[in-house]
Amino acid sequence: MGAVGFGPKMAWLAVRHDDPVAVLTALDLRDLGLTDVRSGLDMAYFTDDRVVVTPPIGGWVLVAGKWLFGLPSAAGPSVTLGTEVQYFATHRGLLTHRWERAVEGDLFDVFRSGDEEDDDLVDERDVFRTAAQWSVDPRRLPVGTLHIAAVPGNA
Image (cartoon, rainbow, N blue to C red; front, side, top):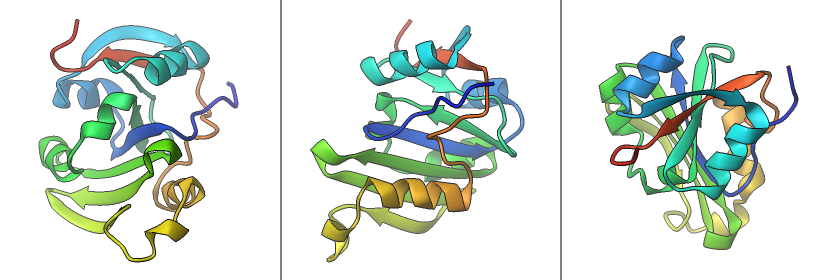
């Protein structure tokens, strides 16, 4: 078990679920197999067409990759999966800091940079603090392997 995780310049979902393959399937991702954490995270950071999916961590499956920066909302995946889905994104270069959670399509606790008057006071630390309070802080993943998956439309 390693202490490797991901930090800034990443978007991810936390899905209340116990089966990463079911999450992959529901999100229309194509499972490309297992990889070690560091290799998987490198791929997720440096490509737009691959994501990583964790095994369950305290009842949550994380899906992470740059492709998720284009996700409009957690509402759709929460309907598709029939469970709570949390969406997080942080990229200081793009001035993007975002979090929200959805249950069966209903959005709660939404923050998107640019939506609030005081959003200049929000930074990536707030995104990770919120993730830790709601589900999992991804900066230290207690897992040894990750699924690597192709995003829809990519082999």
